[in-house]
Length: 558
Ligand code: HEM
Image 1 (cartoon, helix red, strand yellow):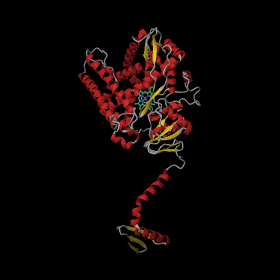
Image 2: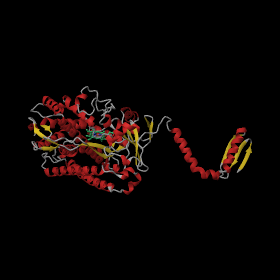
Image 3: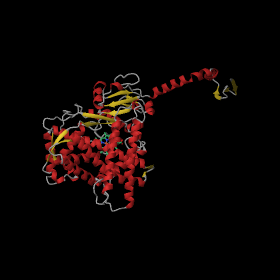
Image 4: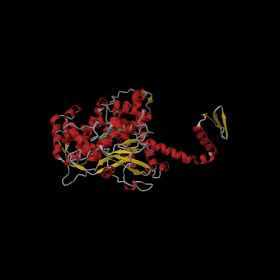
């Protein structure tokens, strides 16, 4: 190393040919130059220690950027490697509620390589879903979620950003707004009348409520999706065979989706240990890919047939259904700079099918189960229907605003049995402080609405089914109140809230207006919740049988 002083300026020429110019000499300067000279004399030692120096530097940086007030998250101890996985109860919502009594309103679990945080208090839920809404409006998308969402082209799994905003805006404005739902009301009505006819055939004998409702609501959703072109009902164009074929394809699609959900609800080691994803040890990825290919083929057939029908112009009187709306959106090209592709179209159709069917049918099923358990409450709902609709009339949407009791029945069912009790897990896009605890980027965040809806500090006799508690209109499900939010809150609030409300009131209202429901003599309804999991988790009612009896009015629906 050469060390020079020219006109009071130190110049050091290192063995690496780096030239460093320093300011005029002073006593401090001399010290600095000595330090530099030591540095250059020990370069090789320093270079070999550089990984250690880098790690220490990163650690200091991490510590200095970490908010000083963040505490370690509480939570049960886990085992090395697998964490808390071996202790997990399949009924996650009740398991998490139990843990919250020990570890408090925010706690963590480690499931293999995943960190999970569970929130069980309105104040913390508000921080996640309102105060830090943008940060938490993301999801952890695993490989299976990508496959089932046409490469992440749907609303549920799209990260918060321009594409998600475009899909959500189009979907809510064009398909799920009150005006669009008015347009498909005829399709809904047609299916509900069909349901009444089918149930009428079982009068006097036990009906499997769950199976019947699941089938019916699937048909309603399918009809709204692509039934406007006929969907199996004669629309007077003489092409009954084609229409019935589309209906058969719809039911096959529904069957495949159910099969896929069943496969997805199995515990998957790749979910827990990301590095195992590529090996697909249980063959889940292969099965799901095959099922999705078959679902896509059905979508392609239905889309092609609709395009042919639209091109031909034909004499067909088409009711505007979701498919029609989506094809129009595709033609218009999207919104702003984000284009709307065929993958988006298919992914949205699947979102409607998955998001709309089980949630709604489970809610109606729970309602009938709870009402059969409390016949005096069922009577009140039926009396209201008779008063508002009358005996010689059928339920219409215009009656909805006057059906106050039915509305509070819906709110109470959603309080006790929110179909997605832990919401669809959110995930922060950057590390974020919640309640004084640091939640690292990428953590899976569960918000336990099920437990909050049963908090005895907020709800009087929380386990009792009592719709009257909602009469004071204090609570609604717009997501503003964090004591009661069955549809979630913030940017990711359910996109189908308006449709769910309409379907519930219309379907349950018609079923109560048409039939008397009671438990078969000596039988007890299975009110056990069954919990399923596919990224989001849902609870279903234990399948029960009910006796249905014809009401005076049921003939008017046929
Ligand atoms: C009783 C019926 C329903 C309930 C209780 C319900 C509840 C929920 C909940 C809790 C979420 C997750 C919110 C979050 O992640 O924070 C959600 C998301 C969603 N729901 Fe619903 N839902 C229902 C019916 C429907 C219907 C009928 C549709 C459409 C046909 C639908 C479409 C969606 C979509 C697309 C999302 C994803 C929203 C996003 O990630 O931006 N839901 N729903």
